[in-house]
Image 1: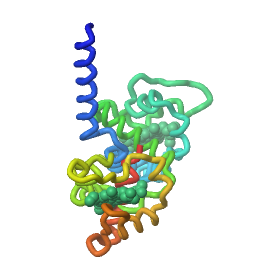
Image 2 (image 1 turned 60 degrees about the vertical axis):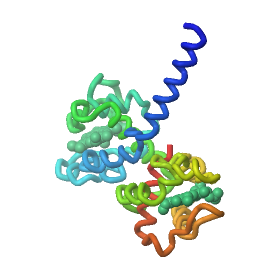
Image 3 (image 1 turned 180 degrees about the vertical axis):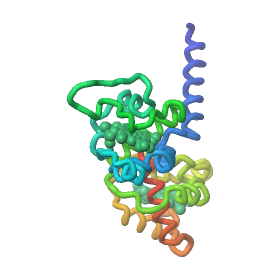
Length: 220
Ligand code: HEC
Ligand code: HEC
């Protein structure tokens, strides 16, 4: 390949990866939606294992938030899809697929499984509870915040092309985790600096809580 071809290839790769970032179906936010509709029945809303169907069936559930850290991507993918197993036999019973855990391989795409894994990773590392309804938060975020913070929270909304402002990157888990839920709520209600508006009087408290939980799920 000559240098020109390499350059074109590189530019194409950058262009496609940016396009993929624009609508990312693999975020913890998407995973949370799938988890609530398909997994909490047994695993409970927080993955702690107290789902209503598990109670009906008398299943002994473990706390996902504790086990997920020790699980590799491949292992989680195999457990969820049910494909590629049996994984490991031996004393660790959680390495064996149980009949009670459905095989989701035919239901979900690879991207959806990525999203589920991202959400389980979030459950395993989250420092702050999700206090509001993230779906409501997502709607409000698109409506009021994306213009500056970007649809996906990277801090690259259209406003950044028009005026010289630098919105916070809401996908940065290091900086976002430093702030408690109450600090984020105060920040949103009171605003900051020249360009972060104060939303007091425009948004209700429960709407701000919903926004905070959506922002938490954007963290990577
Ligand atoms: C019908 C009940 C049921 C549903 C619904 C269900 N699971 Fe499970 N799952 C189980 C059981 C039972 C186990 C094995 C016992 C345990 O690990 O708690 C398990 C185990 C797991 C494990 C392994 C935990 C570990 O580290 O040992 C993962 C990961 C998991 N499930 C993910 C999911 C995901 C993601 C969904 C939704 C797409 C889901 N499960 C839906 C019953 C269920
Ligand atoms: C007009 C542009 C603009 C809009 C609209 C906007 N923001 Fe901001 N936001 C900013 C800027 C700029 C900053 C960085 C402020 C600073 O430097 O402290 C910021 C910072 C933040 C922070 C602080 C995070 C941190 O790490 O310090 C949060 C949280 C936040 N915005 C939430 C929101 C929410 C929620 C909305 C929608 C309801 C919103 N913003 C709408 C421009 C905006």
